[in-house]
Length: 226
Image 1 (cartoon, one colour):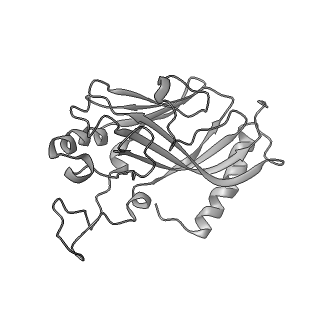
Image 2: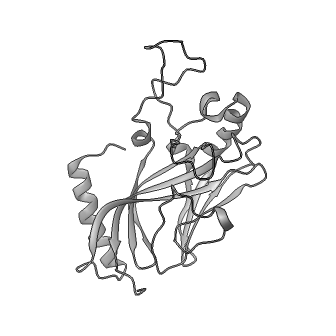
């Protein structure tokens, strides 16, 4: 997904129209470019992952909201213009230094076996329903699979410049524009799931997570919730 000033402006203008069509008053709202980030722990027995959207979602228990999550407040709405789906391999449940990954490798998954197992993610699909109405029926996660031209080395040399790392535009390249834009309203029942064809047989670690990031426009204080 290539980001540009013109594209950002079009998303902003479209967001006002989309939210008005959804029955919300955007005239007094504060609109800002923002994102939502939902995370769920990888499990070797699960094929249906619940990805929380709202701040009061507790379906995943203590691991519903991590310190790197960004969820939607009940009084706000969010217009989605881009979708990223990937994974992360933090060192703990509170690690804030890890990077979202756009493809699995022996480096970012720890072993080749775990990297191979994580490929299962990219044969899955993302589904979204709002108030029991299906909005995304089967968004293919393979759309977000991106292997950069320059990749990290499995065995790094003792001195630079041979410490190759992943090309740093990977996140932008793995973010897919979504049309028509999707409106998430905090006062509604938003259910986001990742459906896999099989369980991920070997997790990179006990703290590995699936990650969904929505980019777009946040509209504050537009729902009936106060």
